[in-house]
Length: 272
Image 1 (cartoon, rainbow, N blue to C red):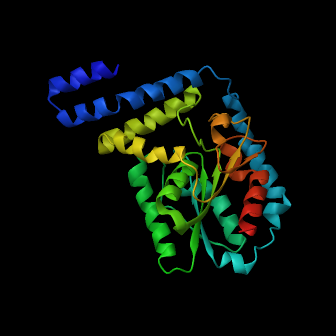
Image 2: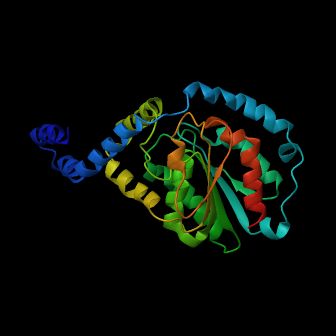
């Protein structure tokens, strides 16, 4: 496949794209291998994602949501929490979680993401500026909470920005084998990349470089929350080295409104 693409590009005389295709052919083969192996893995049925509605109903009746105990001011004064939405989602999708974290006493910031479908490099620019703005006065550090792709972006920023980020919480976020996905998720991811390509051209070389951060041990205290009944990503890929991996019962989409996830987040934030 890579050789056929190279020949077509060569006929067009596009040396830059040809160079990219040749340089990334080995990576493309590795991605294809992971993808083919993932399609043979057993995944939770996609229809189980409908449980997200029930998870939200359970959350708004729970004590952790209705009567959360404020975190000690000596902690909240030191940290700002930024919540990064998942693929195709925006700040509105995580508004319930963000407002709840605010009720705990923390400063929170929106990412400015309306729909998380752009390439990684331009998506990170806005979040990076928020982290730099918060930490510029030296009074606060940032805690990143990311859902799905948002958790992967948090890991990349954690590798890049180091001490400016105090901790990371990932919810249903692959920590390795990021293309080990069910067929419907692969299709959704391919569509997002296609839309980004039409808008910005080819930036896949940057994508490959940036996501190499997931292959490294996290620099910050990191929690990865996963569910064996996740119908969107492979739960096995959410378990990584050098981090605390915690299992919950629920759906992928419902993690942003799952009461057990909120309990884990509260425990993490209140013990910083």
